[in-house]
Image 1 (cartoon, rainbow, N blue to C red):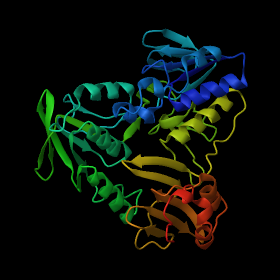
Image 2 (image 1 turned 180 degrees about the vertical axis):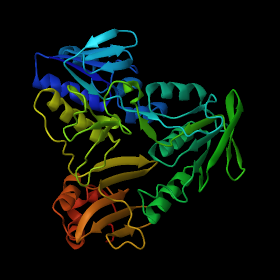
Image 3 (image 1 turned 90 degrees about the horizontal axis):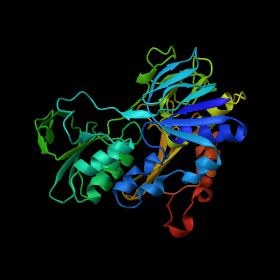
Length: 413
């Protein structure tokens, strides 16, 4: 069997490893137009900040690929013919396959602002984006930079630029930070942390256009404010990288449509990671979850299908973690803040002004946990949600959930 994997992010790498383990005799080819050495995308910011060298971000040492007989090809996929089971590459021509995985990830989604194509305006997703940022971004305290978009990429860009001494203006169109993720008090805590690090955070501010002669010089808002900028980092979200599949017959919605085993509409083709979209997701699972943990599990699940042992994708209780400057963030399950007039759920919240803990409960059971600078044990929080613990029972068990209790101040709960 020749298993071809298009994309070498964590979904592609997980699939390659599981195909190799499941079929020692298979030929495994992993193709990427970004780099021959798979790396941790979430570590890009730490390379820019000087915490890591690029070699430190490699998922495995180079000898790993040779020892496991996983061929790495640096090339770009142009087209797919599922009927003939042939993939066409930009440089390498036709590549026949028996099983194929589409794991091409996402691309930054830049809104259609006038001036968005000016030099110095970019997102941060690919390794090439880091190179462009190194070449174009400010490197001294007087240099102005603007970051647009209040998601995780936006706050990461703001932190990266501040470590180089840039004067950063952070424009967020929502009236508070990440309202679909955080409660009002959580948003306020994150906003205070961002401002504490010298970032000029402007909430409720929409971008009108970019200005400049070849290279960006300023960002103009809908309020008529003009913010000078030598660099503009855009964190307004991503879109699945699936345009290259046009005309292939593989069904595509926002991403590549897959069933619960991650098989596509084309025989012998699977999809996983940021580019995949569940056609009929089970309860509690989003159609698309562009999260590292999700991509890794989807890659492993798709590999089982490629090996002829299909298994339903079962992510369990959702988990993610992040860091905002000095704030650590953990989230488990469903944590969308309950609206003030909601009758279907409610939030229990605690804060001391520097730390925050929120439990979302609904129908008599805890459905989600959100923690800022409160470290929790994943197995305990997952058990609360999976077993439907009541709010009262979870609060009584809070001591067992504390990961750093011996080093931290009591929560006072």
